[in-house]
Length: 79
Figure (tube, rainbow, N blue to C red):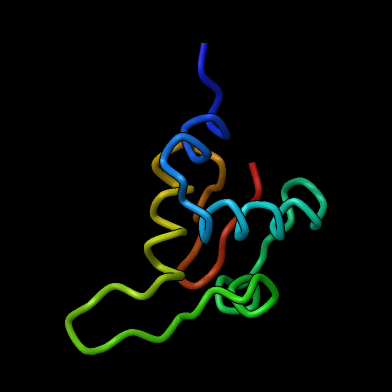
């Protein structure tokens, strides 16, 4: 049985892995502003117009594999 982490490592998604490792430094159920998390992890929130930022792409991937929850705009909760 594959874990959520196995899915991320299989995809060689280094930015998403880095973001999740940084999020893991916070207590469970902590609400973390996404830009702050991106800053700590070194994952940029900037993107050219019409493109998804590396931070948004990584966060979407973490949501997809159910490793984080998004309780409000601009923040997330560690699952």
